[in-house]
Length: 406
Image (tube, rainbow, N blue to C red; front, side, top):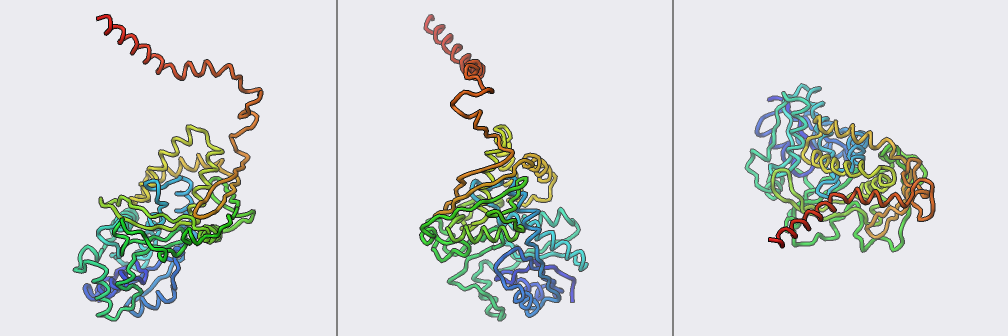
């Protein structure tokens, strides 16, 4: 038997083939690692399948709590959204999974980590960049970049020939990634952006047409930018997100069908379901608008774009991400309060906000008389604020007069 290889394993089509292929190609001892990030899988069956397919050891790791507290909450607080659409469900999970793979490799004395990411996708970058950052001595093996298979249809043929049990078929060949935050769907007929996705693609959220005809109203409490309670009941991070997924899913919240720019340079089309995450993003932003001043809000919007790119591009373990987290933590220290949300036919609408740190003061905003704002002061403010525009207009008039005189 050759050296040890730690394999990122889900028991799905790609990694089921990879396990057998690695044993054939390298005569290696394969140690599988499956991370439970909240996907709807039978982990006992996955473990049994790993052993049945030839693994020498199989790890099932529960990473749900760590995933939420150390990856989802920081990204939510940052307000990071990739290309104004994607709430980074897959992107956030990869650095944590890479961290766990590295820890297992170190504990097992393995010098190689293998993964099932394709050579055209973003995940290969996210996994490998994280592993390089955490332990640069570990070698990485990516079968999709070296084997002869060209498509998932080829993998299905290989599985059939080697009697490897799989759940995919030629008729239902979507590539999916699921965790507590979202589920993504790619491939199959989605590869033609002119073909509308079918309703049967939905797994976490109902199609809008099937959502209830009556809205639901909920209240979410935040502390320092982090959600802590739903309808007055404090819940653990996992309980809270699961409850919001159920509520959002019932009302058709959080499904998007988008074309995005992959890091590797091509465009891809995917359907993403993020019911609970969509509710939290909208609620969090509404609370920030109540609490943060204009300059902080504007600058935080700029950092949110950069944070999203960092997460999407697999640069989690970098000094820049840590520095941005420090900025976000400071701007979030007063983001505590209550947000009331209306869920209806695919929409998650903030309808009311309340916080002891609110900068909204009815005494100041009123059209009536108050003690802190003298309306006569506005004239001087406007004169100074518009001075550059006024000077430009004067200069233009002067130039036009000079040209006319000529």
